[in-house]
Image (cartoon, rainbow over all chains, first blue to last red; front, side, top):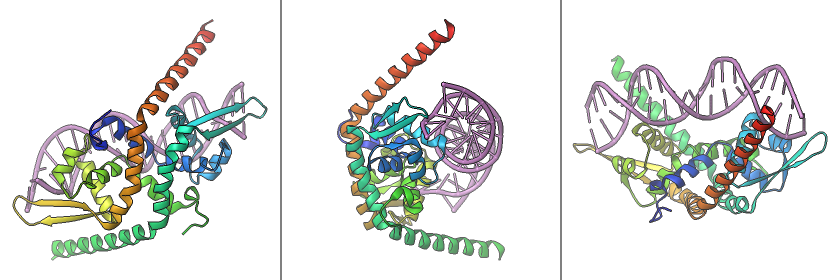
Length: 132
Length: 132
DNA sequence: CTGGATCCGATTCGATACTG
DNA sequence: CAGTATCGAATCGGATCCAG
């Protein structure tokens, strides 16, 4: 445990934060908030994820104790994933982040457009200077 | 704007969430919550970040309108980074995530240890079966 | 249906050297 | 001090094929 509270100074915390930012974990967790889901359901719900990445993401979340994997020995096999208690708990702050982005991404979009415009103009000036 | 609220279905929201998980953004934001910081301060505060990654991360955050960059034309140069209003706002849910991890990472650590133990045992059994 | 295994290009990232 | 430029190693990640 690092003390005082300073995530950027605490290797373990920073490592975990970075792992959670592996592009898919957050999305998978948010989908699992709706309830237990089968593998193929998740694949459909998380747009753009490949089978490989879904498998790897679920394994990592399972390893971290966020997700419980249940295999029903039927044929064809049926596997369900659900958030554990810890995963539920963690999903709440995650949901808050997702909600913020959802409510504010037009601001981000605008900021990007302006930034790109500005930097493009600067590059343009550079070019004029270089050529002239 | 995607509707209903379903980040995993909304390309823009999911893209932003994934970008925020680029390993360093969250940590930089949390450090900047303490107030304006110079480049070298940030480099020192975010343990393990390389100069290159700090530069890239700050550029991305600036582009997203999360961070304001101020250059003081002194010599040697002095550049300060601070959260914008939007960045401040965003940093609040981020802080919640960081706080959760900080308070719960022993659980994650334990879950990992158990998972690794279990899978190691399974691999061991597999090996026994294969050899025998 | 639920993955594991492999190939292989794309991307990331750290290290290093250099600049105003 | 605060970057930029470049390069090679490592990792990521999609596509594909195969199996229980």
